[in-house]
Amino acid sequence: VGGEAVIEDGERIAAVLDEVEIRLRRVLVARYGVDVGVDLTADVLAWAWENRDRVAGLDRPLGYLYRVAQSQARRYRRWTERAPSFAVVPDAPAAPGDAAGREAQMTLLGLATLTPEQRMAVLLVKAHGWTYPEVAEVLGVPTTTVTNHVTRGLARLRAHLEEAP
Amino acid sequence: VTDLSDAELDARIRAAGLLLDAAAQRAASRAGRRRRPPRRALVLAAAVLVVLAIGATAVLALRGDDAGEDDVRIDTTTTTTEPGGLGARVRALGLTGEIVSNDTGLIDLATGGITPLVAPGDILRDGWPVAVPDGEGGLYYLSHDPAVVPTQGEGPDVFGQTDLRHLTADGEDEVVQNGVYSFAVRADGAVAMAVARDPVLTSVTEESNDVIVLEPDGTRVTWSPAAGGYHVSAWAGDRLIGQRHREDTEADDLIVFDTAGRIRDLAWWGAVSLIAPDGSWGVVHGLPPGSEPPDDGGPAIPPRILDLATGEEVGTIDPGDAQTVGALRWVGDGRAVGISTAPSASDGPSDHVGVLLELDVGTQGGEVRIVVARRIILDDRTFAPDEVDVAPDGTLLAPAPILGRQALSATDPGLWACRPDATTCELLTLPFGDLGDVGFVDNPSRPLP
Image 1 (cartoon, rainbow over the protein chains, first blue to last red):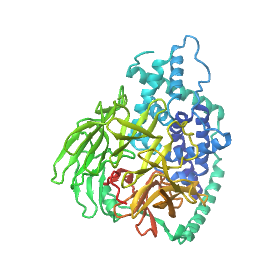
Image 2 (cartoon, rainbow over the protein chains, first blue to last red; image 1 turned 90 degrees about the vertical axis):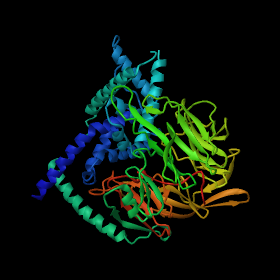
Image 3 (tube, chains in turn cyan, blue; image 1 turned 180 degrees about the vertical axis):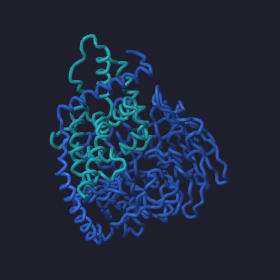
Image 4 (cartoon, chains in turn green, brown; image 1 turned 120 degrees about the vertical axis):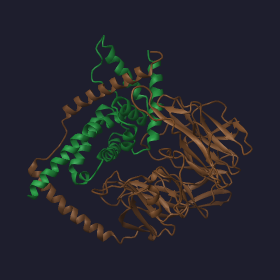
């Protein structure tokens, strides 16, 4: 009976991690770009699985796992001697005539000019529809800080896009 | 592209988000790095974890009598404060003085008396004072205008409008100025305000503030030469310390207004955390003007003691064994407190623990000297706190998210409380609110060391 309970616990945690995965990946991709964001997400989920007893008791694991990711990113920095930065990685250039694809890539280039906090706030709120308090909770900052990041990020992005050829 | 509409900008961001999602999904599928052990291994692992958890509990119990640095005892139990209004929980700490609480208003902690404020909810801004005594028994405070309702969705999001209000000792409560987003009250009662050109804040509002000083005789003087990304932090004597947003680098630079229209840079990417009672010097965080941008994730920049009239360094801060000194606050009797970190000695989830530094502030040979008098090393039940506040009774309060499990979820707001005698520190949970939502009513422009 004890074994079955343990398995049930494990499956419950796996379900929680499945639910967290997409949201965490969006946060980390917005922060670090596709390559590092996806790798970090995988590393953090592996860590969460290995530490599932700790994660099991969390009401809102996303913010916690974001902090774990930040810690992992610092280690990444030590390995690579450089800070992981937002890499714009559309893995194939937009096809000729694909105006929408080219526009989206231009927007990504603009997003790369924002600070990491601005970029996360703009993408999570405006692209993924998160509320301002949701973003604040994950980033561990007041809601007013998120609104500030969005306002400044949108202004900078707009300026970049309006100046683009 | 010229004149991108708000709707077009939103659409382009959504498209970029979809592109990122698709690229991330492809990368994740390629990597296939999710690792999960098979079910049998899970049973064994769980059994091992149970044994380890029992062992860890025993070790924790054994460590319970360990003293912290310099005989400061870190209480290894965690107290959960009772549910209810935030003010009730703060009163449960036994603090005295006045606080402004989001859910109740102005609370006198000694009597429990509550003065409702017009709209105190969600107004407390990171690092800015929201309620300052007027020196005559009243209070200046920031309040959301309840007529401006926040919205989110298509087009610009509306965040709200903040007004500066004055609650007098007689109980009269009136708007001083609409659209104020930071303010500072000088010793003689003059009020400096960052006043937005467009009082309603939205996601597309240009940050365009004027710095206006309302003199005690009612005269209004504009101190900023032109509207810009200005905020005010505190008065240093007759000088006004503030910040100015630099758009090319997204930096918030620390500036000083010597008088109306005369501005100097003090530090780039800067802030001030301690001002001498006579306003002559301040502890400044940030880089000298003209510096290259700070390295993202690089080592912390040590604060400097600057003459606020000249910008020259006039003293030293010796952090002792600490890595650096974070934001400082006066605690009285020529002492300040700051925050730092130390590597964690345990293999717990956080690789650093918080350290509270008690610092002596003095002058030697014409130079200001700030030295560590004592360190209080917290334990790894929380992440290292980012800041420390001082209650009017001298209790040091450092909010930090609690690590752990079950009732102590990592997102539970925690609060380190070190009593004025500084021989004990205890960790409290605040299950339905964050002490970051509480502001003690004091005036950083009039420190009383």
